[in-house]
Length: 309
Image (tube, rainbow, N blue to C red; front, side):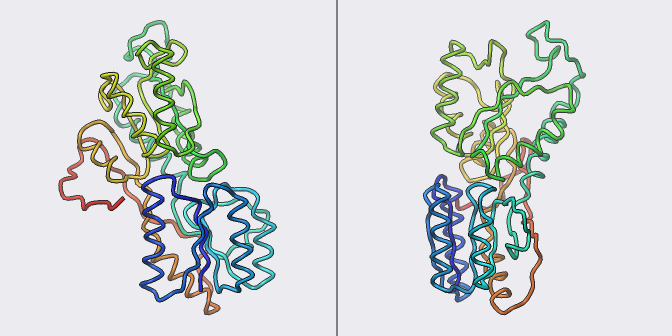
């Protein structure tokens, strides 16, 4: 028996991720106790404690944020129940408190986004002169929309992105705004900026050239508003997004998004394989990153299978 705590259903990606976990458990013949935390860490901690009380064989959970897990994980360890951390990473004073991490390498995802921009603008000459509004004679201005602060998916994507982009004088992050991985926040952020700029996408009077958005939901909400204001997403504004859900791939095909860095929700089988090994007393790799792709403008996506999310 596996107890699984999901963070919620904040996006099509997350809903599909939950379906993938349930399907993988059914396929593996594993009884699954599934709990939806509704975006609250305290609900996850309660769920994990209930799994301990039920004496499940393995606990798996997607941490809403990185910190604050040591106490409940010590309780699981004392009860002899191995724990799998999924999708998002945690920070802990004792790495032995969980048996395995299975999921994305968010730092590398952020680097992939930076590399795309560096390659796209490879012919732009480094020039920090901001005396003119021409994008050829000044740094390219980036609007950054973060996900849930404190989550590894957002924090590490931002860190990986800045690791490369901050060293490149061709680019400058004008502003970083929290979007909490919500489509509605993407809409709200775009509406506020356009209201402030008088129907022009600006921050503090400076034009925005690039949108770096930490997930597709926020990106798609932002694009909805751009359409209403006749701003050509993907042309007037270069857009880099994360997850690669179907709607974002469609927007990429329609040239409204320039690059989507994949974060796959298809990790259920790997989690259940790991759970079976742990339940039988075997050891598993402490860190497993799922392979992921980058989809960008110019790619032939005609034979890309439907994403399902």
